[in-house]
Image (tube, rainbow, N blue to C red; front, top):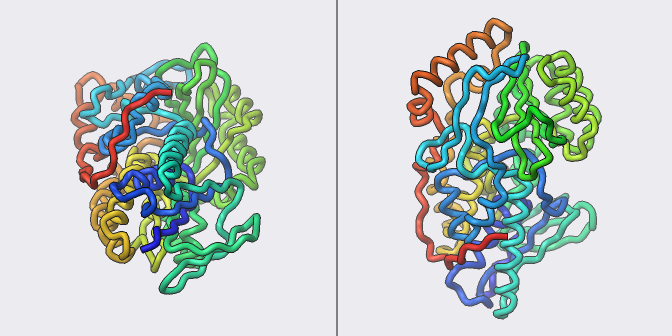
Length: 434
């Protein structure tokens, strides 16, 4: 049987992880899949802060990347809740043990940096397969799928920029919350029904580090359900920022979120309007936002679907089951999904229907648990009034000094430690650091 030809749309977290494990199976190199990864741009070491937890840590260890990722983490020590005078009302320390999932994990890293590490590892695995006579991975950057049609035997794809038409045995959509693959395969008109909006919108960017910035995440709240987080980066002279607002009435917030990078100036203008009078360090942060070249704006939402595959197309990570950044499980779900999909395809090389069914069976309970957010989220973390913010700060003080933070993390923290990692017989790669 000829090797499977697989198109993976997306070279973020899930895409290169899936490709790497598919090539780490026990099959001879000549029988391993021929993989094409399609992505709009080459991974760059920037983006918002994300974390890796529980099962996700186990999976990066299988790729031999624990040391490389540890050396690229941001070093965040925890979260401080601050007021307009930068006074810290309470703090929650990072979990350095990996046993309890607090707001800050043992592996805090910029999304782009993790994607870059996974991409580099995928290249190395591919080169080894090619050296042994296999096809490996072909990377195509600067393009995306424009048309997708499938029959019982193949999936036919036309690329948007090049206009090239190609045929594959399988297509994997690992292209995020606003997945183009999902819309092409499952239908554009009903896609809004799959995205469960949480009424929250935010902008991510980095800025020069100031004297008030440190190794602790500072979380400031302003009336009107506005919030600003300033966090450490993976370089000593920069900090990262997440500005968020919860508002289900202002339609402009949603409209500019659907246009992606095409409306960056409108996105910045809208956040400027919301935050110029927020107090604290908002003037400095708005000024740095205007100058930022790594600004990214998005809605905070979940993707909920009854099925993640249709025919020969399957969805992976945020494209199929985004849990939202506030779940603390997005990266771990992407890694775990990629690992389980690779395992299912390896166990059923000639039967994609059985492979996709096994993948869903393994991942569905994990996803459902991850998508159960803390009671009242995200509104509970973003009071409407100054009085509500004061009450929240007082509650944080009580939680901090009573020791309830640990119990709450155990009860409502991300369920990453409860995610099983099955042994599919993939080659274990030796650990290395950059």
